[in-house]
Amino acid sequence: MGERLIRQPKVLAWSFYDWANSAFATTVMAGFFPLFFKQYWSAEVVATESTFRLGMANSLASILVVCVAPLLGAMADQAGAKKRFLLISAAMGIVMTGSLPLVAAGAWVMALVLYGLALIGFSSSNIFYDSLLVSVTKERHYDRVSAYGFAFGYLGGGLLFSFNVLMILFPDSFGLAGAAEAVKVSFLSVAVWWALFSIPLFLWVEEPVTGEEKRGWVTAGFKQLFSTLSKVRQLKMTFLFLLAYWCYIDGVDTIVRMAVDYGLSIGFDANNLMVALLITQFVGFPAALVFATIGAKRGPKQGIMLAIFVYLLILLWAYRMDAIWEFYLLAVAIGLVQGGIQALSRALYARLIPRDQAGEFFGFYNMLGKFAVVLGPLLMGWVGVLTQDSRLSILAIGILFALGAFLLSRVDVDAGQSAARGLEQN
Image: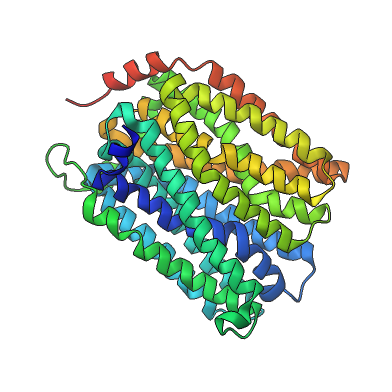
C-alpha cells in the first residue's frame, strides 16, 4: 500500500515541497545563520547581545505569523487559492534567503530583516502546504502521506546540509575563498533548492473547487475567521488536541531551536554540533516512515504518546551528559521521534477538522506551532537566569511534554471525527 501511495504523482509532488523548504529549516534556521550572525554580522558585540538580537528577530517573526496565520488560511479557503497563497509565501522566503549573501559584514540589521522576512515566508507557506494534505489523499492514508512529507524533508534538507557543511569545512576544494564565502554560497543554494523542488507541487497537486468562486474574499476571510473561532469552541476534542499540541510541540521546537545553543553553553565545539544536526536529519528520514506504520496500526494518538515519552527520556539524559559522544547519541534519539511526532500530529489534526475548511483550521494549527516557539525558549532562559544552570533549563522543557501528554490522553478521537464531519458544508 505504501509503495502505491508514494508512486501517485500528486502524493509525490506534495511530499517534495517538504524536501524543498526543509533546506531552509536545516541549513539556514537551525544551522548556519545563528553561527554566521554571531561571527560575521554581529562580530563587534558580545555574544549575549548578538543572542538577544537573534532571539528578538525569531520572536517578532513568529508573533507576526501567529497574528496572521488563521486569517491567511481563511482567505485561502474563501478564494479557493491555497496554491496561489503558497506560491506567494514561498517566493518571499526564497527571494529573501537568496539575498542574504549580499549583506555586508557588520550589517546585522539588514541581515535580521532579510532573515525575518524569509522566516515569515517559510512559516506562512507551511499553512497552505499542510492544508493541501486533505486534497492529495484519502483520510485513511493521512498518517502515511503526512509521514512521507516529513521523511522527504529530512532527507532533502539533510542532503543539501551535508553538501553545505563540506563546502565550509573544505572551501578550497570548491574554489571558494574561505568559510565566510562558503556560508554565503550555502544561503544561495538553499534559495535555488527551495525554488526548484517546489515546482512539482504547483504542476501536479490539484486544489479541488468547493462550490462557486467567491468575490470579496478578503472580507469573507475575516468573517470566516470569526466563524472558525466559534467552530473551534464547538469542536471540543479538536480544541483539546490543539491545547495538547501547543504544549508538546513547544517542547519539540524549543529543542530544535536551542540544541546548538545548549551544546555550546556546556562546552561542545561548533563543528561537532553541526555533525549532530546531520545525524538528526538522516535518522529522521526512516524514523518518520516507521512512525507512519505505528500510526496506521495503533493510531496516531498512540504514536504521539510514544514520542513524548522518548522526549522525556532525552531531556533526562541531556541534563546529565558531559561528553560529545552522548550528544551524538541524543541526536540519534531526537531523529527517531522528531519527524514522527510532527507527521502524526498533522495527520491526527486533519482527522479532527472539517475537510472543506482545512485552510483556516490549519491556520490555527500553524499559529499554535509558531506561538510555541515564542514561549519555549523564554522558559529555558527564565530557568537558566534564576538558577544560573543551563542544565536545569533543559529539564524545564519536560513540563511542556508532561502537560501535553496529559491533555492528549483526554482526546477522544472518534468523537472528534464525528463532530468535525458534522460541521462540513453540504
